[in-house]
Image 1 (cartoon, rainbow, N blue to C red):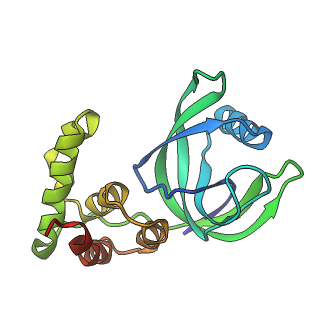
Image 2 (image 1 turned 30 degrees about the vertical axis):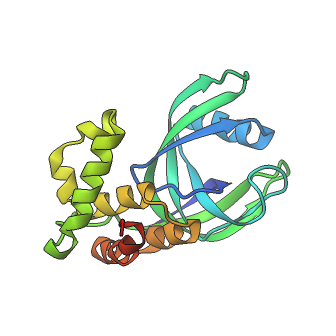
Image 3 (image 1 turned 135 degrees about the horizontal axis):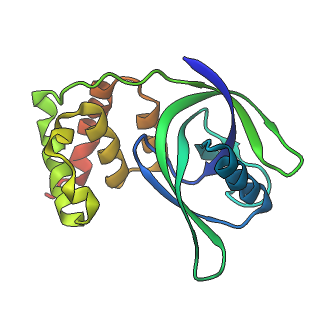
Length: 196
């Protein structure tokens, strides 16, 4: 595991590796964050808010989050800055401090990359469901290489994004280090979403 200092952006959502994130930036601390990331070609940490709000006073972030790398900037219809970012490595927050402008900085330890493992036969239904959902959504996601649906880690993260899970459930799935265990947890949740 590698350790680094990272600006943190607590959100009322969970970002998964290779997931997409769109943000509307208006607070000075986050405008500074975006500017600094653009200048240094670095990312920022996205963590689920455990206590507090996205705007205003610094919120309490979850201890496990995902590095976000900005992929695009644009001006929104209301004149504010919009960004698109993509999830990269997961990390564990060791400690935090707050800058004068309210931006949270975290000393983080990055998790090792998960090994690519095949979706086991008893979880094959999950890959099938995900593929059907992606077909219905259309767009770029429907054009994904079919081989991705055999990757247990990718299937687990993508299903965690599209299933109507509670935020604590999504966070729990992010914190699991074994892709097969993550699929097992999703299999446990699945009966809630199946039609009678």
